[in-house]
Image 1 (cartoon, rainbow, N blue to C red):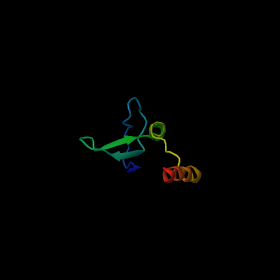
Image 2 (image 1 turned 180 degrees about the vertical axis):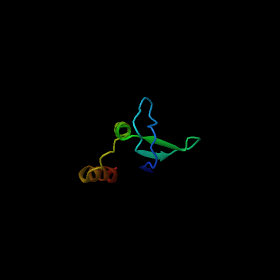
Image 3 (image 1 turned 180 degrees about the horizontal axis):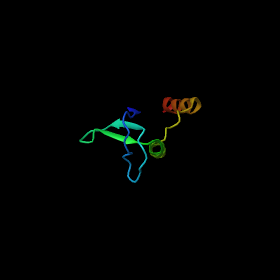
Image 4 (image 1 turned 90 degrees about the vertical axis):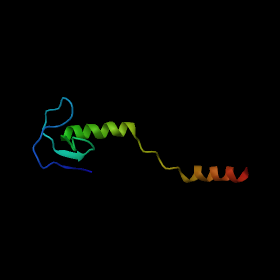
Length: 72
């Protein structure tokens, strides 16, 4: 999905004037978005804040829920 860029372009992030290191495809006229290393890291950390993985349900809690369902 994200790959190293083959060309020397500027970063597409607003206000960033660094040279782009990575690119990824998008729909529409643009076709590709080019980002520098710092913007890729910032984008990753922003996405991690929005979407955090949920921990798996532990075996004891699952067994207790199964037990209460069977009793009802």
